[in-house]
Length: 160
Image 1: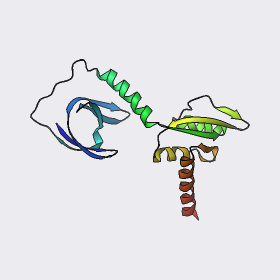
Image 2 (image 1 turned 45 degrees about the vertical axis):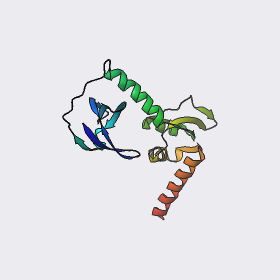
Image 3 (image 1 turned 180 degrees about the horizontal axis):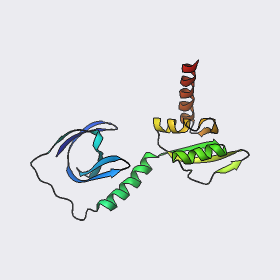
Image 4 (image 1 turned 90 degrees about the vertical axis):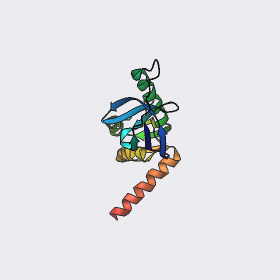
């Protein structure tokens, strides 16, 4: 089949051989072979044309094994930024509520703990960190700290 897909880096067009459809956390994905086996979020497929050419599943393809490995690799690539925070005990609890887990045991120095998180480098990370409110302070990286500060200043401007 031929498809046009909205990827992070823009639209791509590919001829693919479908292998499986996977539902994860309410989102549907197409697992298909192009030059390699790839995963496409179905909601991002802009155009799809079923061709008359047939296709066959690669010998030995194991969807369960592929999906496990692909997900682990995707999460590692996605969470490529190490973020260091100082958090209050309430902030540590809020981290847990957001699903963010420190990569090591938090170290308390007085009333605040220093924690490191593996996070994606995106607006999503900014939103997640802002949800901690005054219970957290970004120590590093400096660029993320500046991005959050800019967002806070814009928020204050709306309320001024």
